[in-house]
Image 1: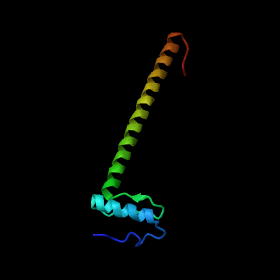
Image 2: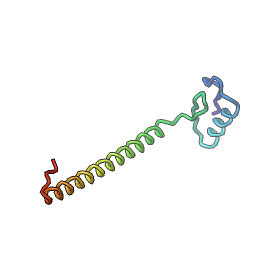
Image 3: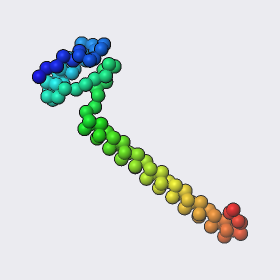
Image 4: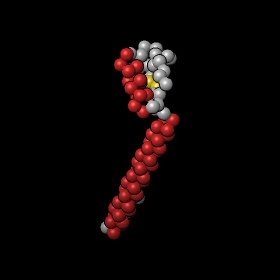
Length: 90
């Protein structure tokens, strides 16, 4: 089924229309584009992208937590060293 890519796409250029029709021909799926020509992700792609972003955020949070723990341990070692020299670290 061929759908006129011009419908609802004000200002769509010929190249964008050809891209949409070619994509439909190759993958059998109609794709939507913004007026600027950016492809709109499918719900599945959007969900996958959100999952990847969540995993990246979790990895960053774990890395920050690890760095915080390393700094806490370093501060504790320094405080212990100061105490051994008779200096109150507080």
